[in-house]
Length: 452
Image 1 (cartoon, rainbow, N blue to C red):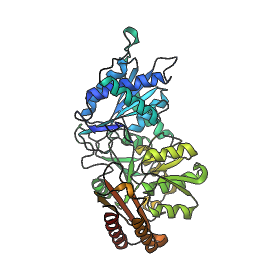
Image 2: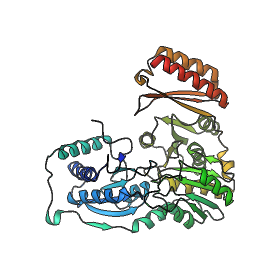
Image 3: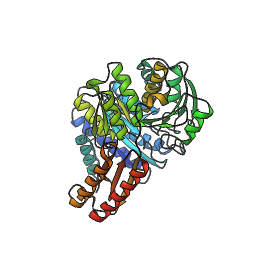
Image 4: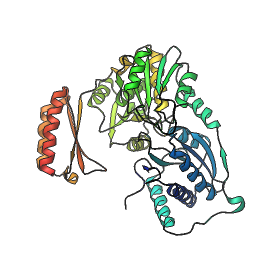
C-alpha cells in the first residue's frame, strides 16, 4: 500500500480516491497526532480551514470541519482563498494548524488535503507519517477517544480572512503600482478575487480573465498552465504585463507587454537583483532546482549572485532556504518563495513584487527579464526502462560524458529517474535548439540501450 501523503499533501480524484470519509478520518487523525505531540497543550486548539472553488471542495470542507470539531478543535472557516493565504492566516491568527483543500493545477475532478503546522509551515514528514498510521488504524475499526459536551469543537465563518490577507500582501510591497496596467488570469481558481483586489489596492489598473469560478471550470484553459489567453489579452489591452496563477495560487508566471512568457527562472532573476539592491537577499544567494535553466545560472554568475540548486520540488527549495537562512528561492514552474513574507510559494505576492519592480525602475518587464537568456531546453521521457540503474550504468555514463564534451560550457545534460513512473527524463540545454534536440535524441537512445 503506497504512502497517502505525497510531496504536497494527499491528492486524488475527489469522491473516488479522496472521499468524504477519508477527509474526515485524516482530519481527526491530524488532531489526535498534534495533541499527542503537545501542540495543543494548555489551550483550546484552533484550526484554519480554506479551499479552492472546486465543487468537490464543498463536501470535503464539510468533512474536514466535522472531523476537526469532533476531535475538540475549534474551526475558523475562511472559505475560498489561496493556499498561501491559509498558511498566512494560520500564522497570523496563532492557530494550531491549517488545512487547505485543493489540487493546485490539477484538473477539476481532482482534489487534495494539505495540512499546515503552527506558524503556517508545512508539516514535518514524521508527523505526516504518524497521521497516516493513525488514520489507517482507525479506518480499520479502532475506536477514537471522542470529547463530549463542551469539549467538542465550535465552528464559525471567518470572513475577515480575505481582507487580512490582501492587506498583508499590499503592506509588504516596497512601492505602489500606480500607472501600471496589469492583466490577471485567476485560472477560475482560489485567487479569482484576491489577486485583482490586491493589485487594485496597490494602485494598478486591473484587467481580469479567468476570474469567474463556477466550481467546474478551474484550470480549464486558463491559468499558469494555459498562457495563450493571457498573452492575447495583454496585447489587446496594451497592458504593461500579465500575471497568471494556478488553481490554488501558490505559483505565478508572467507575460510581458509583447505577449512573451516570463517564466519562474526569469522572475527569480528579476526579484533576486531587486532584493540584493534593497539589501534583502541574504548571503547574495538564490535557491533553484536542478531543472533551473542554465541561462539563469549563467546570469546569476555574471551578476555576482550565487545559485544553490536542490532536487525538483518546492518543498526541497523551502527546506534548503530554511536550513541555510536564504531569503529567495523557487522553480521554473513559477513557485516562488520570499521567506520574509511567506512560508510557502505565493503567486499573488510574486506577481505584486514583479510589478513593483517594473513600477519602481520605469523599465519594461521584457527589459528586466532580459537579464537572463533562456537557453533552449529539450525534455524527452524514456519509458519502460530500469530507472534504478541511471547512476550505475557505465555505458550511460560514457554517453553523458560525450554529450557534455560536445555541449561545452554553453550546454547542460540532466538524466533524472521519475519519482512516480517507470521512466527516465532526459533534459538537454544548448545554445542552439537543433543541437539540443539532436543530443537529447542520442541520449534517449542510449538510455533505452543501457537500461531497457
